[in-house]
Image (cartoon, rainbow, N blue to C red; front, side, top):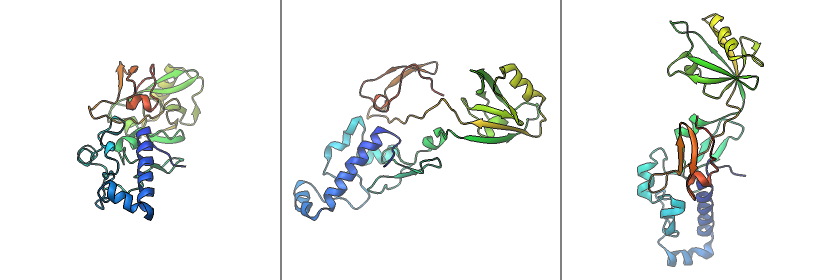
Length: 239
């Protein structure tokens, strides 16, 4: 069963598969030649067999727009482009999203990892923690700080600091432990964003994805937009 980063990827891949199956049937060659020009051999995903795809689901999918707006996508194979996913699911089919760097940056593995960091010349690691429901979570990571360099992100749960379980700690205690820790080596066991999820959206031909947010919180979703199709919810925060 194929997995897709967005509903648009799923729908477009289905059309590509149907188109490929149709053109592979020798009995359809005569119909194909009468209905449209022959399928291009230059990597064009959307030959004239389906002219309506130029504005499919609000997306501008003509070849010029794809080349202009999806430069990260090389000539994609007919069956859709595979995106490497070093998580439990190795690959996702992404004919629209392509191998976008945003997918890798936003990936949530939902696993537990260990990071080792040290304090900077000012004795700081650039990290603010907060106690929520008897757990310790990352509230803020300063740019270019030791915490950011080891990959800590907002929303990560800190399970242990130097082998000590953090369950039940207050925010003050967590900060005190970090302050008193030896500056050359601080070991932290982290659960990767346990309450977060990644939603992939695509801009339509007008350049919009279809939602409004204020102070980081999603307040409104546009009907029939990419945000609506991919399950974005109001009252959720962007992190």
